[in-house]
Length: 84
Image 1: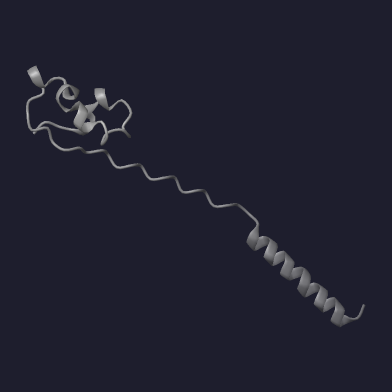
Image 2: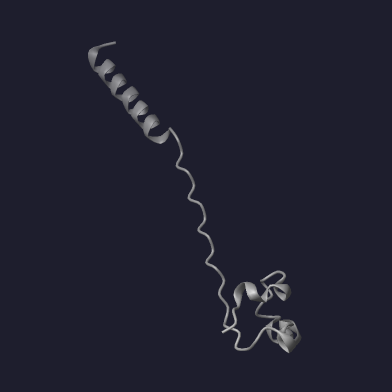
């Protein structure tokens, strides 16, 4: 092989090596999904004892559709809603 062919072969081998080094290696760590914001519902404008202990007793029919995505919402109203 003459010098010109050796030079071309050298350049091609170097280009492949640089390409392999640039594409290979470690993959970046996936970014973790952001935490969902804390749920904050509307304030409760009345006491939470006595006749108002059972939220679902008064508000059940009104909240079924809007709270369908919150599993177990019947027992956890105060996780999102606070009394004023």
